[in-house]
Image (tube, rainbow, N blue to C red):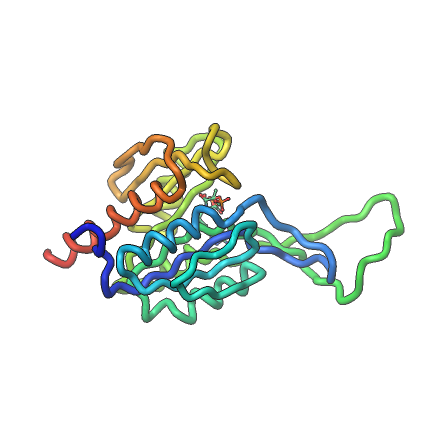
Amino acid sequence: DQKKSLQGKKIIVTAGATIERIDPVRYLTNDSSGKMGFALAAAARDMGAEVTLIAGKTTVPAPTGVQVVRVESAQDMLEAVLQRFDDTDIVVKAAAVTDYRPIDQAKQKIKKSAAEMTLTLVKNQDILYTIGERKTKQFIVGFAAETERIDEYAMDKLKRKRCDLLVANDVTEEGAGFGTDTNVVRLYDANGLIELLPVMSKQGVAREVLLRVAERIRKGAQM
Ligand code: PMT
């Protein structure tokens, strides 16, 4: 029964945008709405999985029937994922994680003064890379948001971050990427491109992706 093909599986889905505070009232972030991650969490729930949804800043309500953990920064998201990682079967990283954060976070609101100001940023630890290194039994699905050279960058991310499956979206494409209700994705495994899915609702994309995850886990378990 395809409908309950993730029955008994524990899954972590990350969604939305992380934010990096500059001072108490300002931050760096991106355009992720959370729709893609939320659709994945809802689809996993409908397929019988026990879902933990780790979400940053989002513009739509989270699905019901899943455990929701709210986080702010990339560091918070990393900790929330690692805390639960050893005990999970599947991780899907749909969140748009901030790659850099301000080196210091001002305790007070920064006052306007000089005509120019410089903000020094430092790199955040890569969550997907970290769990890729740590994985034992976990099936890991990464995302790649690209604006050019999709196949090349997607495969680089899949290999470097040791994903079992990678979902790439060209975020410049009509109906794809940040904020939209639809997405257009390509799927990759270690052998390369496996599928180009047509434009679909994010719910549709989520279901297609998770059906393939369930099938791969089932086949792996048989071997
Ligand atoms: O939320 P929506 O508005 O519905 O938009 C959906 C989406 C465009 C955000 C989604 O489809 C998507 O592409 N998510 C991944 C966005 C992203 O950060 O891509 P990336 O190519 O920069 O990162 C590659 C992968 O590494 C991602 O799985 C990301 O979660 C992960 N990453 C990145 C940086 C970091 N420090 N830690 C990470 O785990």
